[in-house]
Length: 92
Image 1: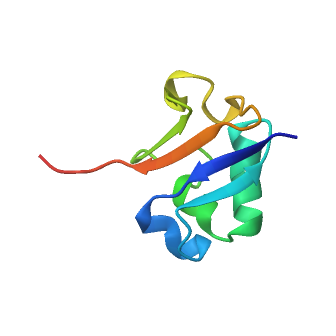
Image 2: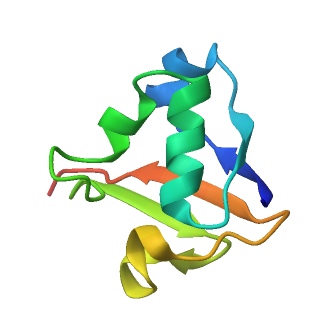
């Protein structure tokens, strides 16, 4: 199982005790989010919608790759990968 580093946006740091970056385990993004939620209860509900898909206003990157253009939740998360959760900024 791969260990990765996950960058947590300010708005979700209440779930991580204020930590800006946490470690998580998993070979796919889906497994990493499940591990994050096991260690930081409630965070998955802010990233995933009721259908278990990434929320429309949340962008997730594995390295520099936007998972929406890769394999979504099945995107591979190799050991040492940097995962970034970025809430989309609304406005106009």
